[in-house]
Image (cartoon, rainbow, N blue to C red):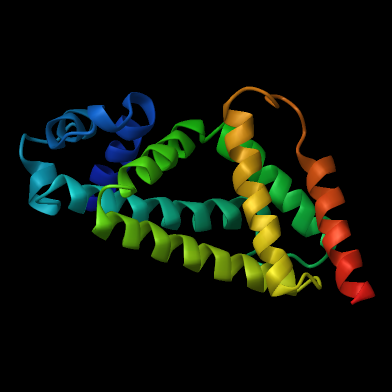
Length: 187
C-alpha cells in the first residue's frame, strides 16, 4: 500500500503526464489525490521540491517495473536482456505512457531549475549504473552499455511520437545488442 507521500507523488506524475508542466500545481495534485487542500504543500513546500520528489518516485517506479516485468533484476542471457529491454520500451510507451510523458516534461523543467537538474541527473546515473551491471552480466562493456541506454531512451521518445507505435522494438534492440557484443569480442 502506498504511503500518503507516494500517493501525492503518483498524483503529481499523473498531472504532469496528462496536463504538462503548466498543469502541475499543489492544488491540482491535492485534487487528483483526493486530499484536503494544502496536503501536497505539507510534503513539498515548493514546486521545485515537488518536481524533485517526482524525479525520485519515477526512478523507484522504473526499478519496480523492471523487476515486475522481468521477475529478476539481472538478465541471465543476452536474449533475456533483449526481451526485457523490448518489454520495458513497450510498457513505457503503452501501459505507462502517462508516466513517460511526465518524465519528458520533467526533463524540460530541469533545464531551468538547478536542484531538479541535479536530482534528475542523480537518478539517471543510478539507473545507468544499474543497466551497466545488468548488461555486464551478459558481456556488454560499460562503454557500450551507454550506447544501449541512449538508444533505449531514444526508442521510447520515438515511439511516443507515433512514428514506431505498435512496432515491436525487439528486433532493433537485438541487432544493436548483438553488434555491441560482437564489437567486444573483436576488441
